[in-house]
Image (cartoon, rainbow, N blue to C red; front, side, top):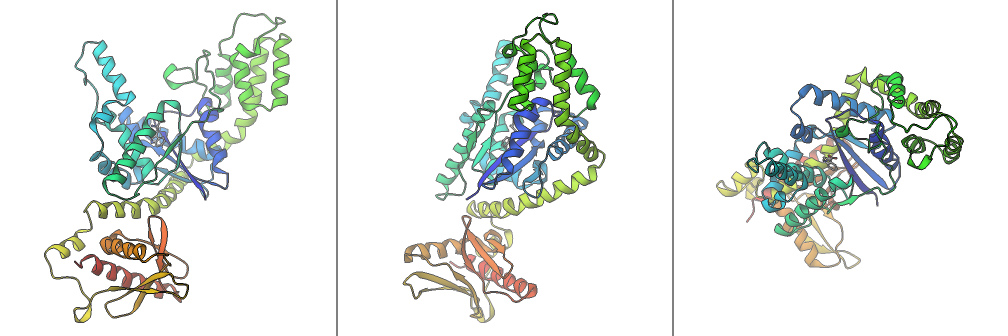
Length: 454
Ligand code: TRP
């Protein structure tokens, strides 16, 4: 089975070398594994919590998309999309909001830190804090739970958020007595390098010590590297590789053999200026081909848009049926079905008949059922169940869904009905697309009829 790995990138900044080594490169490498089903998205709704600067957010979305694509992300393999293209995410955010304990959100680190800062400054505890910041963990939980992600690679600062997503999933499953959500786990990449920035501290936008990955081109990359702070050892004096940012940066790009060579150069007393040039050339060797692709993407935002729209379509093929099931479980079935069931005469077929299930035992002694239309035509045949109770329980649940709540998958030869991600029943083989469309509409009608039965 594939593990679904999902991660979001907040679109407030421009990617730097630290992002590349710490997040982009390992994520893309992981996405190439056959046992991984990767979902990467731009968390542009989260960006709104941090920044009201529309120009910056728009620019950042473009730069981040172009960077990931240039770095080798294959959009055919990975589901790559923008959070704001998936309306199911804010919808699920609300469902989760309604079961989230306010006390849990009070304990979120980012919110608590903001409250503490206010207390230090003698301000009202919630001064300047938006409800968006407060709800940040719930939006993030929706990002994850809408796609049933198993693993979520994040930095340590985000682990609490994954725990909250897990907590919300568990609470929802418990309240509604069904495993609607996979419980996600944080994946903390222990061996992934954190790069030092220009001043030797961790490279981070908040320290203003970053080296841009692509922005500014080769020239700015070189200039930034030349600005890295070193000690005052003179040419010829040995330099300690293990306490020097240049060496850490070099190692993040180079092979073991190259790294050993650079270590020796430092021990032999290479001049800092020269060492920086060696470092620049090594990084540039990796970055140059990607930069060329990056620039081509930046110059063609329409191409990026098409890729992201396709990604959104792929993502919604999962989220839309998932939300339909949730809506149904919460009592929010489509109004036509709901209205019919409460006040109008039952939706029935010709001669007052309605769709119905029929159970039977197959040749192996297992239990199965068929679904027949109001006209008595066979619409579905179930898989086999070892015991009749399960088969009965499945029928009972199918009755509650209606066409809008059922998860129907179009197969090359017919239609499959899924329950909790498992194929449960299928139509007969259809000769062509028209036959399949017909089967689909018959099935929908029958499911709606079942939903309105008492
Ligand atoms: N909050 C994450 C960060 O700042 C970004 C993010 C948003 C995310 N939604 C997510 C990460 C879902 C993983 C899964 O890094």
